[in-house]
Amino acid sequence: MPTLLLLRHGQSQWNLENRFTGWWDVDLSPRGVEEALDAGRRIVAAGIEVDCCFTSVQTRAIKTLNLALEAMGQLWLPVEKDWRLNERHYGGLTGLDKAETAARHGEAQVRIWRRSFDVPPPPLEPGSPYDVSGDRRYAGVPVPAAESLKDTIARVLPCWEARIAPALLRGERVLVAAHGNSLRALLKHLCGIGDAEIVQLEIPTGQPILLTLAADLSVVARRELAAG
Image (cartoon, rainbow, N blue to C red; front, side, top):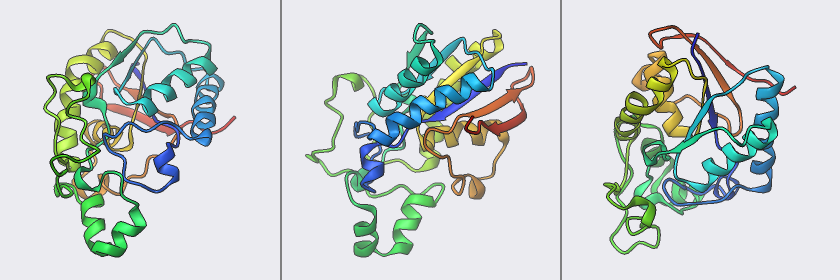
């Protein structure tokens, strides 16, 4: 049966500082490094082998994957990086402290920006220091000014259909190391989670999620890999 592992990156420095991150490239915190290594150890302890990997083009996800593979003794595994697996773009909220933003705009408004399915945050302003459209890794990419979860799903699913699903259908065991919202997109699609429910789904940092799939890639079983 096809096997799919989903892994949200370990705690980032901006997770630690409680700031909106999105497409801004932030490194792992020391705790995030340990979470990534522990994720690899959990995968080994569960007796799971992996054949290929996918990740975003953001440092925190790439490092998480590399550290997990190092702990697994499988740094040699093939890895494909795809911008479509990036975190949701938080637009004008990027870089802001979440508590300060709630104090300024009201908790109700920030909750809408963070937790509604189809309402994006304010767009990133022209000339923002957090504008990544000039970054070489996004050459030719339609960098958004902001995204809702619905928007994020719309860009993640073509990656699933074109790259990840075919690998699973070939019988490969796949590990995807990505971000809270890009993984929500995959779980919504695979598990048939409703619009209202998916925005409430919490995906812990550094916690491997094991999906056992049927031949048609529908989910047969889903479980988090507990610490050994």
